[in-house]
Length: 583
Image (tube, rainbow, N blue to C red; front, side):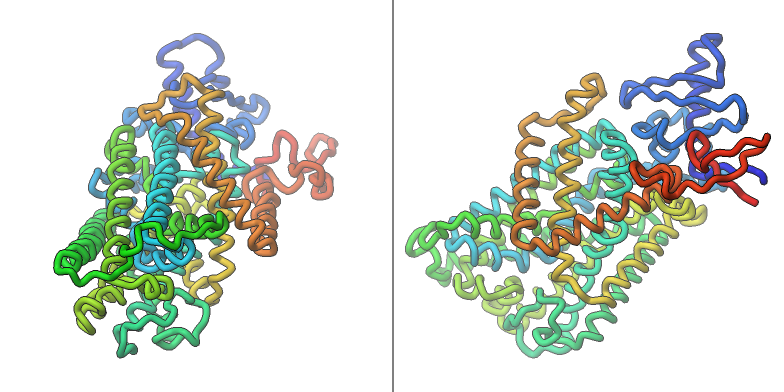
């Protein structure tokens, strides 16, 4: 039976052979070229061995557990690319990591575009209902924004030190090894990313349904997307429009990166313009003396005294700011990630915080607190109060387009996670390829669209919200904790941007708090999260860890005996666990 190497490992091998050439050029004659040792200022030392007996240059997955980045480990130097043996390069397609098409404006379109979706137009009701007063509500929004900023700043340090596509997956891979990286990819690719996109698509569809079916903008409960009795439009219509929205953004992203980023730029200006318009309208109403009496008793009159209420309000605020990590998924495609990535983050976060505070202040000027606490479509009620039916229609269009822009930006970044997972061997390698005609990861986009559409058709999103809160912040916590780990373990790692050490510490504390809240408030759903994440462990060993027989404790249950030749017997696995046997 001939022995065939795992194709993913062949890609890794080619990059390591390249590293061998680089190191030998500076120190020829230092030893056998088949057993090189490579070091890098940016990453940890890399050790690997080549099997002299098989002469196949087989590299085990575990031997490169912290440094193997899907064949892109040595993407830092442009001079290395001509020799980099990636499948895309041999097929004539340019890998995403070498395209370098994203500038500062595109980065702002991603970070701001994902954060400003529907949250700022719906979450204020949840924050105000729990905080109890305008002053307390605005304070919660400010704290939520600053806490999100601490997470974004921590990711900025990781993104400049490890400027690779894949974001959290790449960082967990480098810091903690391939298993945590795989568990993140397993959770994100199958649930977190497509589930989030499905929610955005359904909200987009419901706002379109308002334009088609509703005669009044008075709110019922648009955000209760799993209950059909509270919808303005039929459930089949919402699903149809949501699926159509997914297909449209998938096509946009499949055609070209330029089309996708330019679309994001357009929606960036639309989102900012809509929030500025809300702010200006609020100021005009205030100047004309037609504002509400929400501030007559003082900014903090009626504030809640319950810490639990503030925890819920903070959670709602953080949900509206979620998306600050999305630029890290495409860091390798930025023209100058070491400077542009932190710049974009530190421009985008204060812009979003200011827009959210200004918009909420305008809401309080125009709408009574009772309206704010009962409405989940505040922007629509705001528009109708000021301009009547016409204003409601205009703001409905703004919110729908804002959701579509967020959907486009999320599609762009999430597809990169699928792409990197394919290159790392976590998914079949076909998903880690770039189409040579469009220079886009079409296979990754199609897989992502298929899973998202499945979520839309399934239509259950309430449990998904809890799943997202617990699992999402679990991986946020591990990744930001990695900033502290790297400071201790790799102090010499080159960090073009370095945040204050208190920044990741603060975010880790908040993440633990939010995880704990999710566990105690929804224990059953949190248990399902734990089961699902742990279910990825055997999948990892089956897919990328050498086989189920390599699993700790239970591996021997999956080790059938086989003939190895020369009258020797043994178990499948061991040093040859990454070799596939083909009859």
